[in-house]
Image (cartoon, rainbow, N blue to C red; front, side, top):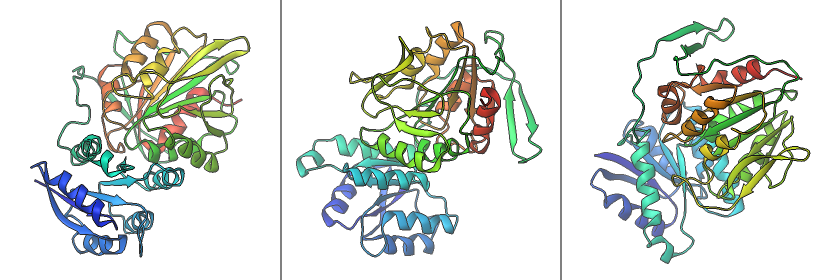
Length: 371
């Protein structure tokens, strides 16, 4: 049985969340706290007691962000799920929590009726199941292939860099000239915001390719994510807008609740942002974004797969591999919050390079080059 700590200043919310958790026999409410300071005392008293923590953001004495900052100072790594409001300010605060290392977040119901419809319960339990590793992060069939792995040492950072040997069915990547048409297409899910904060700010302003990103998130949160990254980056980071021209010097974050495609236009390539059905319960879906690149004339497509549950992105990259010149970078297991998406793409035999999150930006820059 997994031990859970619930932290919220609302008695009604504590009761609601506790009832949800107790409905699943795999979980037990070990403790409850009414603010971050109480939670901090409980955690520091016994740092290994809790398998997961459900944490409110806005609380008296010590809020959720302040608690995360204190835990980071003490280097305490815990599986923390934020319980966030849907309001704009709530989205901004949630992004900050994810940047600080929160495992994931669920949005609070806007009414008591909504709280009782089952969707909130499903979100809470699903987040807890993955946070406590009760199911494999890929939760799907993965190609089982034996691979030979080459490991080298980066002389400057001393990080381990893993390069899998490309399998026979994988087309070899062809290095292109600096003036070639290139694009970087990146996908991530759980743990993605923190990972992106360790990648995008390290990229140079003169990177020789635009970047498109699919991060699994609801509408409203992707704009806050893009805004926060833009504050930290030499590149311009923004939420993708329909009809916008794809240009170097820009990072486009797919809009939550919509699908993103790159389409040919009179002036080059533009972004197509559409409201349509989810694929595999995902809006945005990385497979759709990758598939849209298949019939483009980009001479080099750098595909990057970071931390996340499931295997989104692999099917789209498989299609790219058949027709396009691609270079695939995957995050390693050791630095992934959830080793699902990077594992699936790796075991499909499509990866050129496996690197730690600290080295992803370097790998992208090395392959793409600068203007």
